[in-house]
Length: 366
Image (cartoon, rainbow, N blue to C red; front, side, top):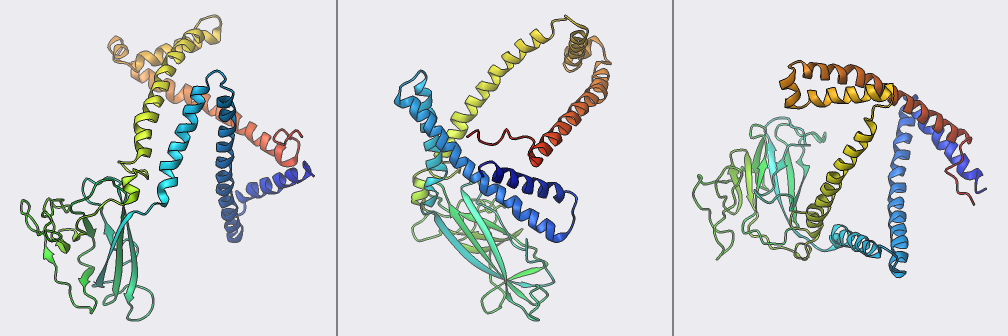
């Protein structure tokens, strides 16, 4: 049964996915989408297995202090740090806030995308903002927003930064010809306009400095809701960092996760690519040794493409770029297509052999 069950599952699912490319029935497509979602669950388990394998292999190497065990230690420490700051600390509380704004529809509008919110200027990805719109008053009870109906937009945010924000200003973009801000009783909402650029708004709380964060129009916004050129402006006041932000968690600009990625991973990746250039040059030198007709064709074509792609070649002959374009669009494309067709046929043949059980290399040997 150790071999028969995997072979049967491979045949069933392989045939199912092959037929999904030819059957257009709605029920079949719905079932195919559900089965495709199972793949993500399987992938999640493979990540767990992969991490367990890393700990097992490198842990043994560290415990035995084999050659290069220091690199294994660095690998495990880096993995733990990224897991801790990228996933583990996400359970810590974040600074959150919300406000609900009601609008009266002046004409028929689509509920999705009717209200859009922007993050405070200069905050990058430290704010996660969401807008949940719902029909607050439906005159004919048809679930659509038509003239005279009212919608409620709940605007919420979560802040992942490690430093306090003196004045968090969110720009709320709406179609002024379609939506009118109203109060709870349906009366038009009296809004304070954003002062002209260069003036200071009132303090968000007693004793606090005036708001100094631009509201998308180059001017400071008063506390609460105010009228802006693109719709509304919401000044949420001073926002303090939470435990989540003070531990530098998450993947924002101030997180340890982002610092490791930008300051450790990216430089090491650039170093590997820089070293790879020398290996490619060495391999190219060995490949261009003209020992056969094929090698001569390869070397001449490579020389033409290289010269036609640099200013020196264009200075030697002005039609070099035209020749290079012909080589890339005709010769190179034809060869690449032949290789891709061959690879596709090979993949199809291998897949069919696995589906019918002729290829059993993926099964465990025991």
